[in-house]
Each structure stands twice: as structure tokens, then as C-alpha cells.
Length: 198
Image (cartoon, rainbow, N blue to C red):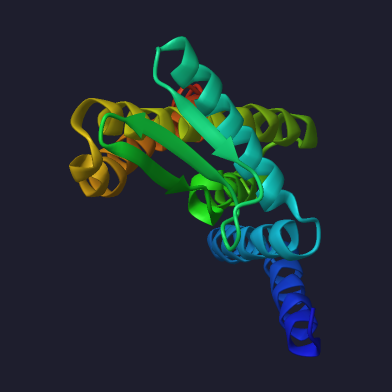
């Protein structure tokens, strides 16, 4: 990390602590969750090197599920210039799917962790439990998204790549992500009893 990155981190942290101290909860939640998502993704990619591990786990899971569905796939771990590749067999050849930062699920997981981690009014135990469930559900949603893309490519060929990846896959992931957020954040707060009125 560079000096300006560290300076930005300290500026963000002081802002979060200031807003928490003076109980400005909406701004605290916004600044905290947006900044935390940025820092989680930055550290996970550049310091911890988690992106290749996530990409590999997603590709392996899709490979196994595709095999169970009778769709032939191959994984190449050391393709030059490509993080990880999942290849879908077709009568006309192979289609290469690059598993990068978006497909690895790192972006979605980082955002989910930050939204749950800064959600006001929850105990630490509830935060940790919700984050654990959310990370697993987000990872599984990403596997489902990529599996849908693989199935569409298998059924309709390479011509379906743009439709499968850009529209259908993202729509599936969006719907699953909204369901995860609803289950973890909206549903519990919607079922709280209203305070008694005098």
C-alpha cells in the first residue's frame, strides 16, 4: 500500500469513529459500509491474495455441478495471462470463461460483509453469524450464476455467450443477492414487534 492509501484509510476510520461517537447513524452506516467494502476488497486482493482462491473454489464447484448435470468442462489453472479458466465443451469447440474479480464473488462478498458489519443495533454475535451465513450464500449464488451460464452455453452454443453472461447470469445473481439481503437484513427488522403506544 502507498502512503496516500494509508492516509485515505485513516481519514475513513476517523470519519467512521466520529460519526459513531456522535450517533449520526445513517451517515455512519453509509460511510462505514462503503469504505469497508473498498478496504475488504483491496486487502483481500492485494494483501491476502484471496481472489485466486475464491475463483478456484467457484470454478471447481461449477465444474463438479456441471459434471453431475452431464456437461463436460475443464479447468486450466495456469493459463498465461488468465487467472482461472472454466471451459465448456460444445460440438463446435470450447468456450473459455475467465473467472476474474467479479466472477470470483469477491465484490459481492466484500459488499455483503461491510453492509452486515456496520448494520446498527446488532450484537457482535449476530453480526458474525449473519456474515458467515451471508458469505456462504453469496458464494453459492455465484456458483449458481456461473452454472446457469454454462448450461446456456452448452445448450445454445457460443452465440449465447453475451446473452448468458451479460443478461441472464447477472439477472440470476441479482435476484439471488436481493433474496440474501432480504433474508439477512430486511426480514429480521420487519418482524420486530412495534413498541406499545400509550
